[in-house]
Image (tube, rainbow, N blue to C red; front, side, top):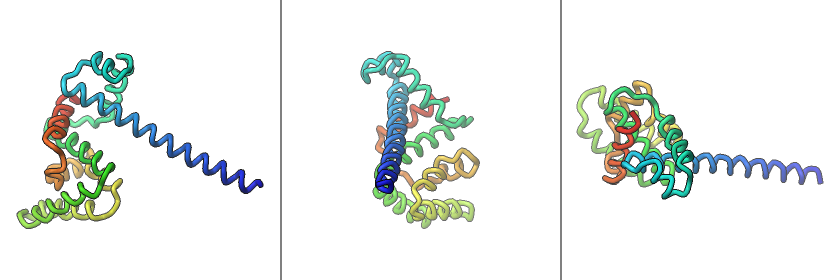
Length: 177
């Protein structure tokens, strides 16, 4: 009987932890959606109205999303970061189409790249894309150190985002500053 109760307690604890993670992820997605609406020009009060929350909740969600961004000094670094943040969301949701596109792009990049430095970035992307560790890939693509910034300048993710998704990311970069 005791063993069964211990198992039930452990199972319930694991379920609670999974639920907590899902709730945090949902909260992050909601904050990102509010930020996207605001970046597209919708006022905070209108956002609150359309999503059914108070303006203060809408403002807090907006601040949460803005504060989650690194402080990147140059506009092109912010744009590249936002584009890769959108790609990271897609790769977490459904990795295979994103990775397939990246592999195709990497093959093309490898055949056209000149110079040892550029070949090094292609090789690093190859390792990340084909390594099977989505968390490591996402962590590397969103790195705020010099390596992460450089990696994003030679990205294999061209064609992963729709034109609308690209525009939203660019607007977010402008408004994140």
